[in-house]
Image 1: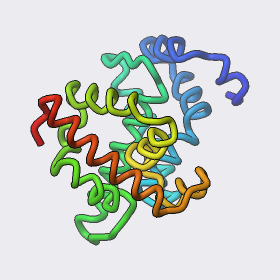
Image 2: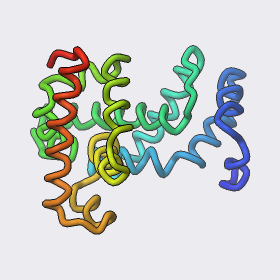
Image 3: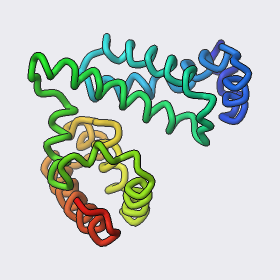
Image 4: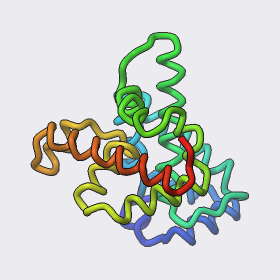
Amino acid sequence: MRKREADKINDRDIITLLHERNEEALHVIAERYGRLIRKIAINITDSAECADECLNDTLFDVWNTVPPQDPISISSYVSMLSRRRAIDRVRNATAAKRDRTAFTAVGEEFAEVADGLDEHLDSIRIQSAVNAFLRHQAPTNREIFISRYFDFEPIDSISARLHMTPNAVKIRLNRMRKKLRSDLQKGGVHI
């Protein structure tokens, strides 16, 4: 399927195709969201080969989870699945090698917010608290936060894209982590 044809199919139609077990849905997802999936995976694993494998794994996961899952946004859903697959690959690789990757660097930064928070990120309470936190951030700060902690983009890449110094990005991230920690505690999320 060509990109132009894939763009004509909306998320609801993709979900319908998946419920009908029509493999065309996977072709549409690969065409439309393949770059996003690979970008997330390569930012986490720092490996083009792993990114390609994560794309395949993500498509496999979509096929196996829809139904019963019924995501509203395909891009959000495949992003989450891709992140999970890439993180699993890094964990498996670092268990043996103890390599320092983008994932471990981000994990160390985010440890200030809460040790073990990644184990609870799927809980609705924390998701809504993080979403509320992000809604109240300035657009640039929101983009920095999402790029770093959801897409695992390197700080140098974020700073170049936003025409900021790496130090300015680090300072903003540090302030946002402290604010998020405070907001989570105020919201009853004990960390």
